[in-house]
Image: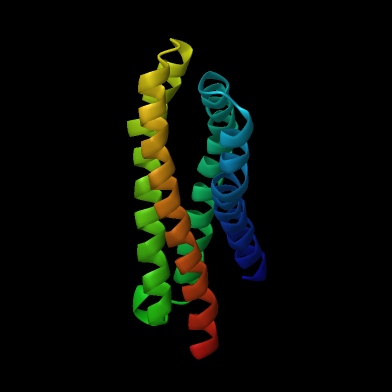
Length: 151
C-alpha cells in the first residue's frame, strides 16, 4: 500500500507542482521578456512537453487512487475526505481533458499557422482554466492532509 501512496503522491506533485511553476513563475517571466509571437511559441512548446507528463500523472493518480480504495473495501469503507478527494480529482481531470482537447489542440494549430490573435485568445482561456485547476489541486492536497489528521 505504501508504494501506491508514494506513486499517487509523486503523480500529484508532478501535476500540481507543474501548474504552480507554470502559473506563478513561468507565465510572469515570459510576459516580462517575450513578445507575443515568441511567448505563444514558448507556451506551445511548454504545453507539448508538460501535457505528456500530465496524461501519465492522471493515469497514475486514477489507477493508484482506485486501487487504494479497493484495498480498503470500496467507497463504502473509506473516510468521507476520500470521497471529496476523488470528486475534486475527477473534476480536475475533466477540466484538464477540456483544456487539452477543447483548447490546446486549437491553440497548437493557431501557433503553427502563426495566427497570433486567435492563439493569444485561446491561451488566455487556458490560463484561467489552469488557474482553476491549480486552486482545485491545492484544495485537494489540503483535504488529503487535513482529512488524514482529523480522521
